Image 1 (cartoon, rainbow, N blue to C red):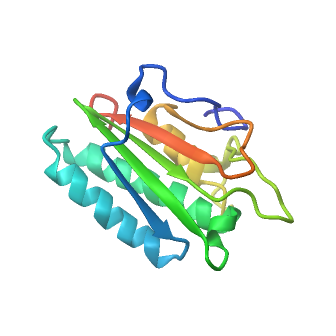
Image 2 (cartoon, rainbow, N blue to C red):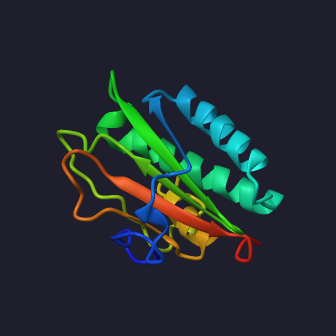
Length: 163
């Protein structure tokens, strides 16, 4: 995801070929981001995989950024909107996917990264996906081309890759 658009597709190792270990749909309201973090944190803490605190914290930060983008840039943030979060767990790694309701009617968008944005301290927005890419070692992306029914933005964190 280090280019200007999110890398299409999904992780290649087959983790997405099975049903998620945990999945929940949230109302498209700002308070749902906190509820989502609590829900994910609960599952990460109770996982049989005993994730290190750094992986848990990084995954919660990535999830917050992706969900916040969902509310700001898609129909999920409109009245009656919602988004669905899926979590796959595995030994020393976790996969997260956030599916939204699709682009806003007046401004269809594709999840993308603005290169160099993390270096520009004067910029107030556009830092979320570059930060996700940095935390995941570029193991992140979005479905492409975007389905009119919604985007799915995903990321994978591995215990050996967290700082």
